[in-house]
Amino acid sequence: MTEPLGPATIKVGTVEVPGRAALAPLAGYTEYPFRAAVARFGCAFAVTPLISAEGLIRRNEKTTRLLATGDDDASVVAAQIFGSRPAAMAEAAKIAAGAGFPIVDVNLGCPAPKIRKQQAGAALLGDAVNLRKVARAVVAASPVPVTAKMRLGDDAGKSTLAAAKLLCEEGVAALTVHGRTLEQGLRGPVDCAAVKEIAAAAAVPLWANGGVETPQDAEQLLEDTGAAGVMVGRAAVGKPYLIDQVEKYLAEGEAPAPPSRAALAEAFLFHFDKAASVDGEERAARQFRKHLLAYLKSAPGGKALCSRAAVVACCDDVVGVLDEFKRLPEYGP
Ligand SMILES: Cc1cc2nc3c(=O)[nH]c(=O)nc-3n(C[C@H](O)[C@H](O)[C@H](O)COP(=O)(O)O)c2cc1C
Image (tube, rainbow, N blue to C red; front, top):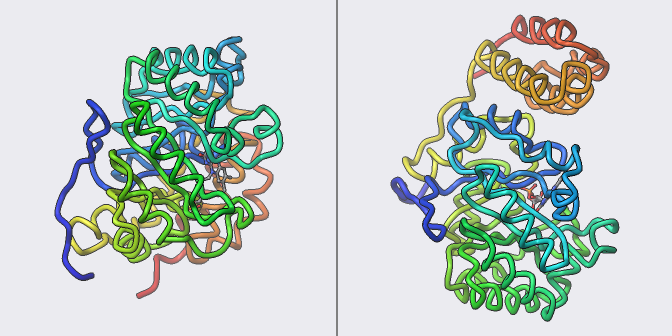
């Protein structure tokens, strides 16, 4: 590491976000139970999965469940909403803020056909006229700061740069940019030059995102983009301690060792218990399988337990797998 950067907070409007490393929104993963597990290891800032504005307004039960949070959540959590109707987005922002979230984030990057068909996500990013209306309506209605998460379009970042300027004009308080194009999807190198240009032009702090798997990757991404912070996505699934490692490495120059097997197993069980309290044991067990598999795959020796993890159906099954996990040898030198 060149020089430790020291501790930091990033100011998002009136909200002080501790640290530089954050958990990116991941649909199906960054709900409250996983965020609480990640927060246990020190992650201070996280984003919910994208939440349908229309679903929130209709008080759809499944959608509303995505607003679950609690005292042991990350200290700052942004609720990410998506949609394309300015009035609906404004109303959804009020609902999310009313549920206790200190930041409302607008999704401008989702490439999924079902989101783009609604002119939301990445489609909204490409529609400057409606984007302005949505941003204006959300900022005016939201009692908490509004941020936006974008990705690069297939024009070397030009449309994203234009959108970033528009969003700043409308009072958005911070931005995140996933530095890959729509065509790239989730693969390939991040276009750091494009993200750097956006970060330099934006009048607000910016989190760079994409491809961070290690603390050293995060350092490189910060250096190459000039961003204020980094958001870690897929690499944090299975490694709830990674964001803390990134944070400490950036601030202090050294990343803590991964937690012991016992501490990890305890955190996994804590995650499952949280999920069961939100979703009930059966549903939680089904949804926990992918997390358990990720946890096991990213821990040496854990792969042997994957076939059992893939079929857990209740708390006893989860406890059984974790008991075996604890008996595996500790990490090697
Ligand atoms: C399974 C999955 C779900 C995602 N869900 C969301 C989402 O709800 N909102 C969003 O803005 N981005 C979402 N993303 C994009 C991530 O936040 C992130 O931008 C992307 O994974 C790149 O970061 P990474 O290389 O660190 O994973 C998702 C990505 C994946 C793989």
